[in-house]
Length: 263
Image 1 (cartoon, one colour):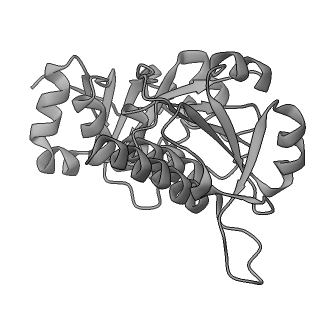
Image 2: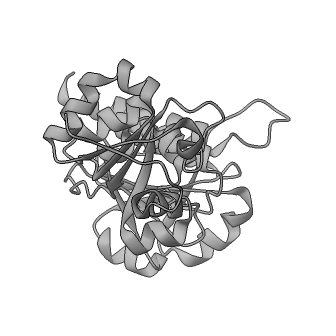
């Protein structure tokens, strides 16, 4: 393997990687940081090979095959000491592997099930929602302004590779999304709604809006022809975590669609 050794914090490749810890630079360069064997392997298998692959000498011994795969796919292999790798990692106990990869652009599939996120601010919740959406075979996840960055290191880790398997679209306004989904029935998760989530016909083209509690009234004002739906809960429980609620509703859609197809 051809390996480049980096020993200075002033190295331009290292400085680029460090800059990607900030959202504005991820947007500027259209690149992201992937930490750990799982995410890097997922990016390779999905056809998004890293441009730069940083690793420590100890990690090199444990992950020779992954390094060879990355180099074969076109990655530059960059060996760095532990103290330099720590300047670009986001985890408390890094695995010694960090890659710089282009932001994935998975195609939108025509399955008739979309997810819209509005006001989801926790990156862990966002990553979990994306992982659930991928498992539910959602066409696309549409991100509205105010949602936390789906490409942050924490959201990527929580997504467990979902970012490479599902179309993620950034939308400037709700009005534009309504033109994208003009043939879809649109629902919003609302703990106070009268219609239950399992009373909806999810077999037709449908979109689900998930948002924070504080966004509920604004969402209802912004969206035309949106139907609030609720998950029945025990008395005294006000609401579910947004990622949990999304999972419950999306897998009701999966159940109905599987029943329709005879699976």
